[in-house]
Length: 469
Ligand SMILES: [Cu+2]
Image 1: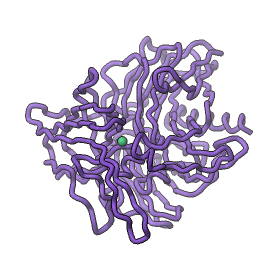
Image 2 (image 1 turned 180 degrees about the horizontal axis):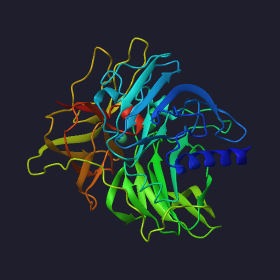
Image 3 (image 1 turned 120 degrees about the horizontal axis):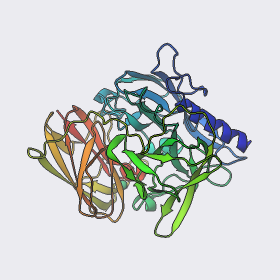
Image 4 (image 1 turned 135 degrees about the vertical axis):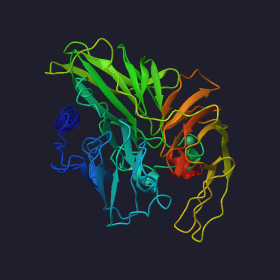
């Protein structure tokens, strides 16, 4: 049972991406119309997941699945996704990292009406950037993401016929998620207030693509592209590949200038990293783990090399994708805006039913108040379309926060704690007490969420938005 499921998943995920242009993936998920290559239907629905062998978990799944087969799009080509809400609660779908029109951003009230139970909403946009992205609801996030509504969106390079998978013998999406499960597969609480005020509530059932410590077969003697995505609600993963050289080629969908040898690399919630490995001869195993603190480590998955036919050329170094068409901020004219992330610890008044939503976190002293159709808080900043900005971010808390801005990519310039090779990203992991400067051109008009991606932190105050007009 486990073996066959494991095998099945590997094969599907693997061939789903390996066979370049074929979008008629073998799983009946992310259904593509053969005549319209980038048209998909996604339902959001309750589903039982066999996460722990011999048990079922009452999850929520895209097309009733975990993991949902990655949606594959192409840079510069229109993508259409019909989203059908079969949940008993409102939802939306946000396309993390994609620079798209505000009406497609999937934030309730700010960019669209919530999709009510039984309703359908059609998302349509043309991804300008290639790389590894992901999608998830932006409503009731602790529960909807925590119970399984997370998926990958892989945007192939516009020149993908000559690039990936042509230059990589395999291209493998890897979704990291630690489920809040009891031994019988039922859910433990997804959020505990005492943890929400600290690093968040972590799960105890670690999975990669829904499987604990999977063994994934890869071609021997070739370059393999591993697309790691942290789709967890809480954790930072510190990736380490044991006893085998590996290279970072892209961070949050943006290719680096040069492949960077991987020592270890931390990805916070919402972040992605593409890693290239040149695989050894058939019959070898490569262990990939996450480091915990200074001494502990935990195996995430292992790769097993097999002789497999491949047409990919084997270059000396890892092939690098082309850069995304991002505007370079003009630092000489950029206006500086300062943001301080603080621990707040305020007690909010109870509502009529005696429920309270505590606010533990604040940006520039303002904890996110939440919003509804008639009540949208003021933006944290008003930006002029076309102008360059530097955001000076200061984390005045003893916890780490992956800070994400919708609708734009920004360039991380410098940090007071480490040397930075400036790079573009959509989410920056701020260490405790770290100060970071980021810069970008405000080239996408709209009201864009600006928040910590630790779900319990955004839920308890660490969220706001900027307006570009
Ligand atoms: Cu946070």
